[in-house]
Image 1 (cartoon, rainbow, N blue to C red):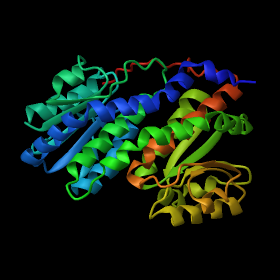
Image 2 (image 1 turned 180 degrees about the horizontal axis):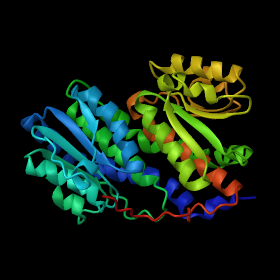
Image 3 (image 1 turned 45 degrees about the vertical axis):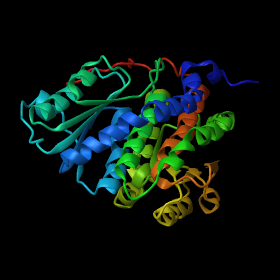
Length: 351
């Protein structure tokens, strides 16, 4: 019998992600190459990124990725300094990036406007080229979503990650990353083929009220995004952590049967992650592990295999999709409507 979640807008939009990513790759390549050239001409000294919600998790990915490629210090903006505390920011010689699917939130627009006043290079990642954010930015990267009707972001998130990965690839003059980028739509299709099985596995956790989600490095962002999906769809108190931070106190949460979701890609940090997970298993944790690594999957009560051979810098685009399916399956198992999470609307305007 088919899963009732399959008829939801959320499920439909998860399935659309390979096509969306293909559009971004095909339609934004020249635009992003031009932006990379302008970046080199302007030679900014640092990068500041403004975002909220899922877009803020995309910004966490950008901190690692753009930091690795450019060597520049990268910070997440504090928009309330501008909009609530009326402070100015010293954004001269800075690349200021705003990420927002709607481009409507006043606080994100305010950061780019402040950057423009200080002659910073300003860039918007958005799905609405007529939005205030796009109109404020010097450069705009279109996410090419057409529309995302589901309140919980899926394809806007992976499109944002892809655009950021394309920017990193264009800035990295020492490596040819384009071939790896071209593989992403097919890799997402492989995950989507597992969607029913992942949703079925999630049903086991229908009584879960709290969990932690662990990632590290590039997939620190993935831990935050999966935790957000569990919160907004299934109303679970899901807390994201770096594996390094988890040792420093939160590990005390873990007792027999406590759920831990972990993302373990092919990575220099993989063995450290597996050591932590082996320790948590010895304490009775119920482990859900997303990984291409056999050693990691063997530790799991619920193993979810990721495609092998994905470069770590691109793995967050792939590894988040099983998390989307897991949250969808859990939501349906709890008899909740994935298209109508309580108290939420598609466009949120904060200041």
